Image (cartoon, rainbow, N blue to C red):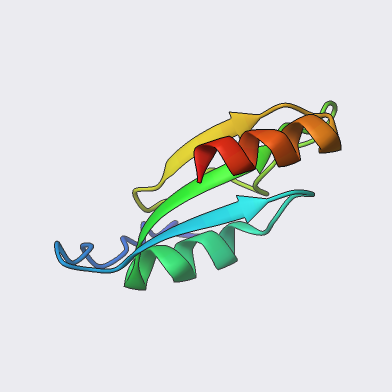
Length: 81
């Protein structure tokens, strides 16, 4: 079986920016799909014993991890935005 490396198309310099807030985990395909059209920043709630994104994205994405407490995460999101 032959492995294949798939690279995402380069991000447009003037692409709109988006902040993707992840409260309870997300699939990497959603992140990669958004990153193809937007300059994406991910703000994810830390999940103890789990992962915020199902896999490491293959596209550039700034990822910030917030506190695991839902209340503290909500406050951190408000401060971040």
